[in-house]
Image (tube, rainbow, N blue to C red; front, side, top):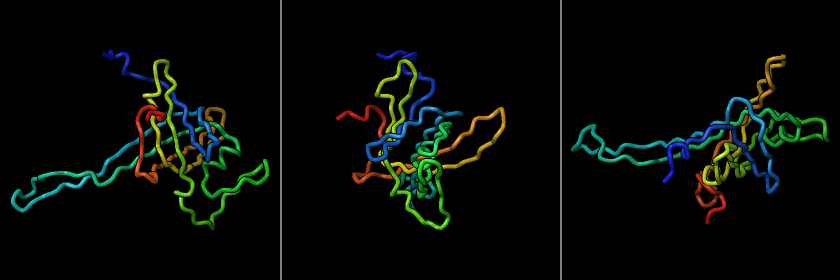
Length: 170
């Protein structure tokens, strides 16, 4: 039986965005990686019970992962800015005149805690997540340059949204 000590984990994590078998590993962050899961529900009512619900059903689920990455290189930037284009090795261009589907950029994202006692059971996998970046750089001596990337989850072809635990379990 696990003790309280065994079920409490602190610390940083490593996020991997799997781009067609080529992983982008985001293991340098500042401010904490935040995972959010939210359900939307609908209360079911009957005339006979007035405003008292007789049931409530889940009608939707949303999942997202906020990653404040400090890794600043053009390769990583091109991968987290959907619709951008890497020009040679020295520039990333972002176009304002392109309308793009984020689903076209959705790939598997995994969160792997780095605390000493964590196992594969502590991992989180978003099966189909697309990046959306927010760049707000402050150039001074007291701040790191942080690129805020939010991975928004979408159901995969089988309808799976998120998995908690060992991603290799069968």
